[in-house]
Image (cartoon, rainbow over all chains, first blue to last red; front, side, top):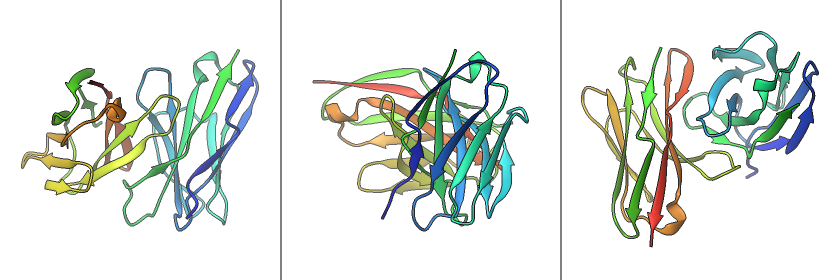
Length: 113
Length: 108
């Protein structure tokens, strides 16, 4: 069984740029959620995708967008990067029947300069 | 809007039982509560999940009182490798809410 994987591991961008982060879900899982975790804080829910549709969204502006593909992998896109977007971005996958049993990837560390 | 709060930090000696409480208001009867362990620069790792009374697995127990305004993660006999940050997670209103996190330090 393959776990959740994310790429890249680390990324450095400058303010105003755009970034795409990728996530491959655990085998057998059809739902992907994304979280932002600032240093020293708990993860904050960005959104969830199920069957290629957004299925719940946290308090994040529209410049945070996502996609889910037919193989259940997912992308998180962030436009017009701000300094406060510097964080660890976590992806979690689950089966829709048990929405809270999420399994997390190792995260992508994004630094915005 | 669900708000989940936890003690900021706890210390425990090796071999002791540790109980970490999460306070959560405004969750519905069937909303699940999940606990995760996180080491620095890693993704959270699933520990246990439940929505009522008591759940036990091979590593922990989860206690949820009838009013469901809190839940308690119980780690039976901690070891040095249990030093980590512990989070509760609540799913309600089609959103996920992580707790503020409890940094557990296990002392030899």
